Image 1: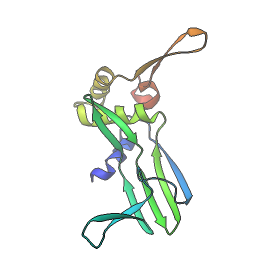
Image 2: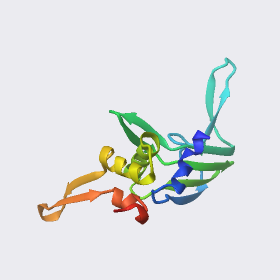
Image 3: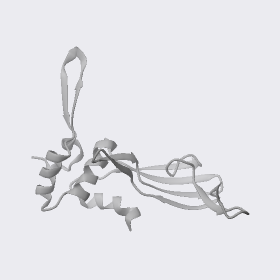
Image 4: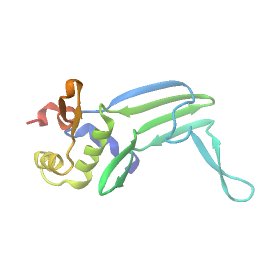
Length: 153
């Protein structure tokens, strides 16, 4: 199922995301709003009402913009029971760079794992430059932080 496509990351050259557990009053959006369901009102239109009991399975939020992938929200699984919520949120280190690179890897590359990583590094570069203290330039290649050690060269 496409909704759970993000789980393929666990069998990829990327480090697995951490799973953050939230439990408490309903507070985690799925993705923009608190958990809700859609019901027809008397005139046949759909109306959103708060979820009382039930699951929400939220896939990885992304879009394409200027021919590149853009990360929007982390995937999650949410269960609501009256005013209480339990949520499992899949959060990698460096989420923007991680998910955008993983999306490119899964959707735009072909060949062996090594060839696909080389293609990612070349075509979906994740090298960021910033200025640190003392006006020194800091160069960070996020592939070195998001790939499993086995796949670093």
